[in-house]
Image 1 (cartoon, rainbow, N blue to C red):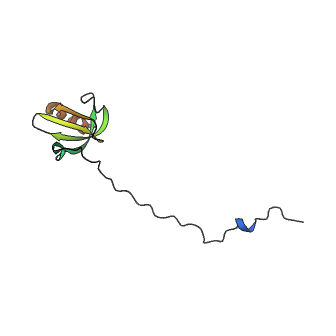
Image 2 (cartoon, helix red, strand yellow):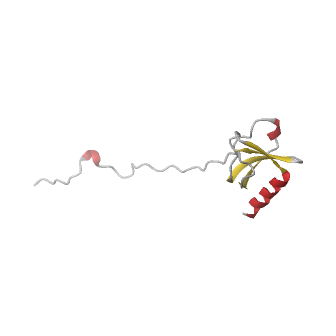
Length: 101
């Protein structure tokens, strides 16, 4: 009688020839590039919660570049395409709101 469940030779694997998994490396976090211009040299990247203070950037949790001045605070989105200018008093409220969360 012929054994119909016999495994063909090309499907058989020898032990020890399996692929060993390579250790995974964690990618380093790289901050997005700053917006172009002299104004943004001292800007810092901040995670903020915006309501409707900067409609060009959007609302909700956002990561924005912040350049603080004496009267005005300039915000830029991470991609650098959307920018907004708000008074420092409004930025103080945003910073306080974000710190509470």
